Image (cartoon, rainbow, N blue to C red; front, top):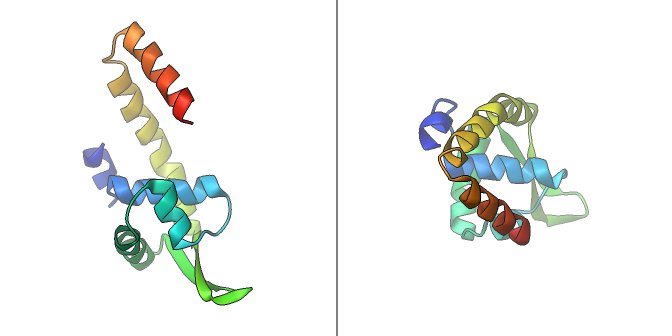
Length: 115
């Protein structure tokens, strides 16, 4: 996966953060992203710094509480997700295709349990 994402100047962590923002459908707090992705606050901070420098996300003060920062996708981030998503899906399908039908079924059941 990292090899394919690298072509878009993404790591798996950066990609997951972008997808979490897209899935959230609204600006999110860094702490929400950290909890959602089960990574440390320091890790989220590093990911946000890199993505912001690349113009893929933007951090703004929360208008209702200026002590909080909200993170949102930029149009560049949205476009990148649209471009990368088919590559991501194909890579997942390629790896899942290596599993037996029984293991694919078990994986699907486990994922449904988790999500």
